[in-house]
Image 1 (cartoon, helix red, strand yellow):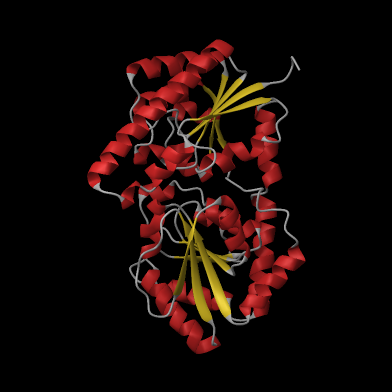
Image 2 (cartoon, rainbow, N blue to C red):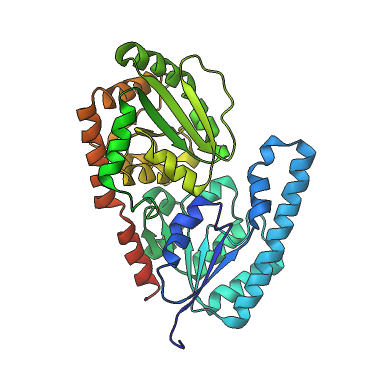
Length: 372
């Protein structure tokens, strides 16, 4: 027991935030050491923060203040514990505390991260979004033994002097595995006869990306009905519903939970990930696409950033980000032309996941980093 490695993992919220869960927490259950997950934001408060756009401006301001103060208090408490206990490793998902880092917290972070081996992990362009202060980022760059990111784009946002610390590691998902391949294929076949099911899984901040193509998906629904006599259904799995009017497309809004997201991906025929071309989108790690293909789900995605690393011609279609989005219609019609075509895309999706994004490969990387 004395030789067990002690690891403190700092995440915004391990139950709600997909990136922290799938980048780190999912692997922690396989580590043999003494693992402590430091939840910076309580689950209930974090849920309210995610849904704050649906309330009044004054309530958003009050909630934001309470949210920040709560995180500040919790992270200070955890850092004081780790200053005393000196864990062997500290892993930070994105940031100890977002946006603003008071002087006393900067000093505490610098002290604690100097006493342990520090790994800093992030899969979004957190500098552009303001999720981390420049002061805290400087400390994490200096004190990290390794900086784990998804892409060369994110690596390019780290100062050249720290590039030798950077490890490129895509986000993947082992929780999707364990399904019966034959049974899943038969499930998808059974609904393919009468309908084509698209699935989009994301948090509410990504709804503008989906809204950009919603009219085109509505047109696609008309064409799918006219040519194949099938319904086109879009299942939106999100913490907020997609509120829009369409004529032909059927929209099912599902409140996100990890289990429900898994179920809806299983029940679908195509996974989609539209992105509006801008610098923040270039930093996205294509995680939802990786989730989709891990179940053998063909995909359609905007030809933006890391999406291009996930989607090849065999497993799906990349759509150019232009003023006209007719290519989305062409992509849907191409994949669902017939069952044999869809099956070929499905087989290639599974192969792409096994070759480039398997859970076991990522687990091996983290085991090596933690010497477990």
